[in-house]
Length: 465
Image 1 (cartoon, rainbow, N blue to C red):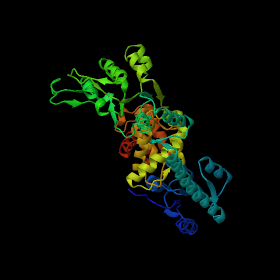
Image 2 (image 1 turned 135 degrees about the vertical axis):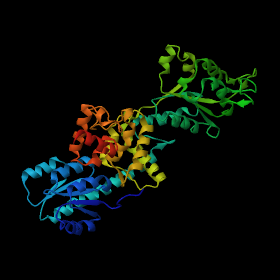
Image 3 (image 1 turned 30 degrees about the vertical axis):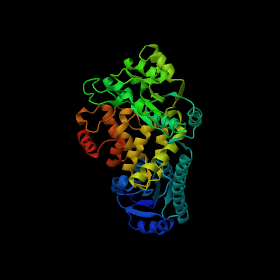
Image 4 (image 1 turned 90 degrees about the horizontal axis):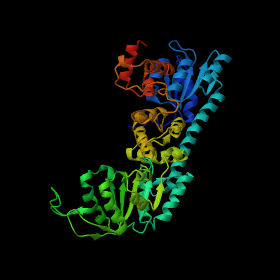
């Protein structure tokens, strides 16, 4: 997939074909490409594929009025600057155009100085955006610590704690919600300590069958149980003089917790089926998204094991508590993902950045990265637009990640393949409202609703819209 237009693009929507050469005469020397469309309805249909940076829209057209086209453009792509043009100017129309989101209102014949000023402003604004995004990515690179990015005070404090405790701590507990980057912290603790040249091994306690836990951690001897055809070295032995990261430690079976406690306190392990003990020297880093302190009060998790693990406890904040880091995380992720995909995407548009900064992010950094990867795949232009982001977010709607001003907030979610006769009244009204806001642009409406265009056509037919 390649970018549609490497230069800024102007879409001229006017039923007078003489407008095309006039705009081209001034726009091309300023660095713009120009696309002309004589039909307002056709312009709205191609808008989502064309992705213009500027739309110049004639007020009086036979099929659909310029104000309706203007509203459709702004609804379909809030980052597209719109200029309304007319041969019959009036104060009321100018006010209506501004309220509908127009950048300016020009009369025919044009004031070419004003037109040049507007286009230069748009061009320079795009260039400044590119510079800002590049600066954010550079700052993110400079602020990176052990694979983590954080300019916020809470993350700078976290980095400081890691530097201080890594050389000394033998057991550390990392707490925080899912997706906050606990394994990155564990890796940083290992790499910043004296054992960085030794092994760093990981076990996800939530992914191990309960009957195999003991063998995974401590190993077994041949014949210890059915299927034990050879001696096996456990993770504690493998990690000798290195570090062992036990992710989701709250999932550790209660029967195994005393044996882990002994390994931590005595530095001794015993293979399953063996009477011999082995000395091991392992730094143990554990992580959980559960409240082990509360669970230790109800015997769900051993209190003495909790205290042993939490000699040093490091808490990772959720992304919603460090929103000032989102632009830098976004810049770094987009640069890395776009480079891997071979795309020339430099970042996100201002409207997309606002959406990213305000979204709730229940899945934290992992969710942010996944959404941006989908958006990089979907994006057609130099920047990830708000629509690209909404389309990327749609698969995660079940996790409550929605845009703050989303048209879905007032009605139950619409399932893409839901039969039209099962739509609720609120959902049907939702479709009507989005179609009205996009001036009948079905491609834009489908994007905003997060559904396929085929499903939207079925609903329109069923609802007789």
